[in-house]
Image (cartoon, rainbow, N blue to C red; front, side, top):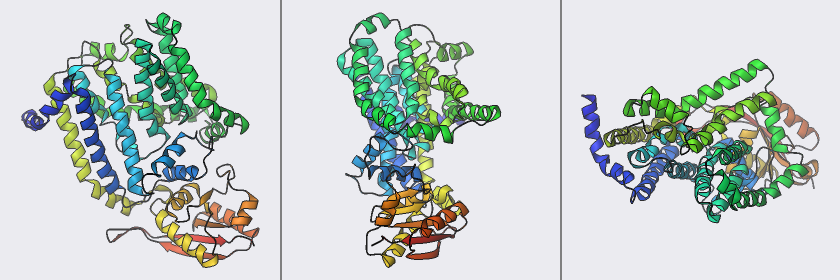
Length: 512
């Protein structure tokens, strides 16, 4: 009975699946499908997040973009450049940032489908976008534009160009591989594992002799080095700030701590992939022999996919063991692009068109239900609250600027306080200030004592944030205070009220 109802629900999607299966129409159909995917998740993101303010990590990149540099304390610089370019076209608004995030993962969905098409055709290729669309990396988690989500399209583009370079050894594909790999490395150093996977694949591929005797690998390497070199020089000159940040934040203090992180890394990655895996098992019913043949293929045609999929997943485990680093499953956001190939590429896996139609019906209806539930999500967020004071950033920005302009006629250039809060608040401030995040010159290299005296600073702390209040007092002791005020901020959404919270705002005007 249930299967009959599902087959009836499949009928409207028959044309989509036929288009995806047709080699002449597959790219155009995939593009239209991805545009619809982007529209649905943009609507969901705008509505669901309308009761909270911008994420601190996203806002921090806007702050970086206000001080263009070859590198930043926590990450390489590429996303700051992307954000600066994006907001030179779009207004500095939450919905525009959500659009950027969705556009990024949607591009990843399209490029991953093209990548999987190297090994999958017909019905198997048609299943790819639907299997990927139920992985949270492409949906819920992808609504946060950050280094992890940005790697999804960059890794897919790198691997797609690399496979064509390996096959054809043409200059265009080889240069594109180098450019995409450099962009990935300039986004996050986690991409070093991608580079190892590429190198290992060239050494173990059946075409290795022809490839290494051609100009292809040298063109790829040359483009990569040219793009990355300025940042590499900055790294050396500044004593590797992002690497020091990772070392201090993710250091494993014991064997048990490392093992706990390894458990989260493994179980978390599997958990994110679980829905896609379950749908594949239920709808395509692979045998045990097909699963073994698909996930661990060593025959020449599928060997590159196996190496490119498993190397970035497994190599970090051994590196983290020797460097005493705690792993995080979220870092694997770009690593599942090839999962449909692992699931379906084996000739022992039979994929019928009706099964793909059922998959499409399930995924599309699930997506529509999620979009319909977006107002409920927004209401839940309003009542439950969110971490890092993300519900109060806009109100904090308004209150801080109001207090500042009551004590100084100068524009507000610096705002200090906890990193996530001041990053988000600065995003909304009309004066577009820089941040004095966590009162740390490491996190805010554009701040020094002379600038604090010359331009002044407004500081905002939660009333229960004792460490922040102590630092506020220390900064205030070295300069005359303009005003200290305690305010109660209450977020509102569609006339409904969230939890009120108290904050302390101190203004220190510029010294004349």
